[in-house]
Image 1 (tube, rainbow, N blue to C red):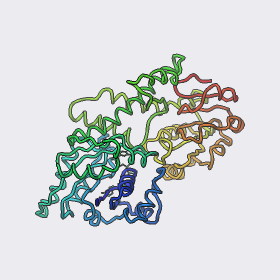
Image 2 (tube, rainbow, N blue to C red):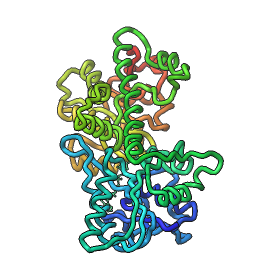
Image 3 (cartoon, protein in one colour):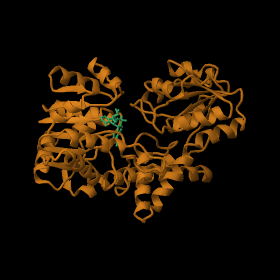
Image 4 (cartoon, rainbow, N blue to C red):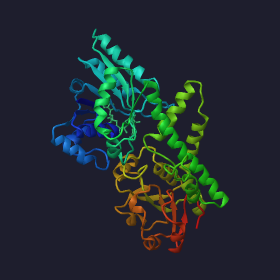
Length: 442
Ligand SMILES: NC(=O)c1ccc[n+]([C@@H]2O[C@H](COP(=O)([O-])OP(=O)(O)OC[C@H]3O[C@@H](n4cnc5c(N)ncnc54)[C@H](O)[C@@H]3O)[C@@H](O)[C@H]2O)c1
């Protein structure tokens, strides 16, 4: 099938590459010429495990190409995926300007039947807006070319995006056009050969499903984070509580980890957008508002612990920070807890040397030449001369460190761990103090 993907970011590039892998002829469009140049030169503009190989293989096979030429992209695909960003607007609602600009481009230039697929995460009712934007452009030039608008939200996780796309738990298709449903079934058939995973529903339900999924996952995290704060005060251990409740099949073990707050490009903005949608419909989401508040508070927990130990004025203090990305296996720092931690430390006068296996370039882009922040090329190098170690991201390479080395390198042998990576008794045995989330300090 001929497929165009509008927006070549985390979702668009993975979608395009994986569809090409199944034999489709895919053209990816982006308005960012720099991204397209990197891809045309054989590079990958983002860090996503395994993606480089899929892209390389399919470019070589002639099934995957990249362009900034809108007319070429509109002409190419019968199926037009819209996978552009939907960042939060000032009031927290999803900013649809990129989605609607993409829709208008398609409407302005299409000359034959198109299935326009919203893959971006968009509020309920957006498909109607996309349909109207396309209709408006067609009317302007007196065209009656047929088209369908489909909602096909994406559930991939950054860091495991290729696997998630290739082996999806489910594929949600919101559509009311029979021809479009047939095409979507055919397009996704290779991804579900041993198990039917495609769920066809009405467009609005599909749009809401994506927000509902992220809201539920964010809720689990904030719930555990709140309980963790209580566990600390009550002399309990959240990790034991987690095992105790996770073994209940109705609860399950996934997404039940306490930590220093969720970040990333999806949960924070999608939770905000759903709250806003509900507010607009005069149907307040009380639980979700609390989920968001709890997460904001949780991002400050690590620095509160630092302040408790070192005092509110951190002038002259220097910290090692392990992890900048909002989670492991990605370079994405959108809404990452590290940003809140760094901002608070800087405000209190501290300096930081950070290490992250892949996100340091992104951090340099965000923080520029901020004199408070320097970078190390290994976890151990970051420790040199630091008063204490703060861990924000649970990268695998942080899981079994040499505690003796950490102790020898730090001025005050203390670790503030936002991801509960270590067994407290082991850290204590090595002569270090250890403060984690929802467990007693040792
Ligand atoms: N990142 C994730 O893990 C994830 C997962 C599921 C869903 N989503 C959703 O998918 C959407 C895209 O997210 P992302 O993380 O891939 O964003 P991204 O910022 O990585 O990529 C978006 C791309 O769209 C391009 N773009 C903007 N306007 C354009 C236009 N008119 N024409 C062509 N290209 C245009 C941008 O230059 C950018 O490269 C969002 O709605 C997001 O909520 C993201």
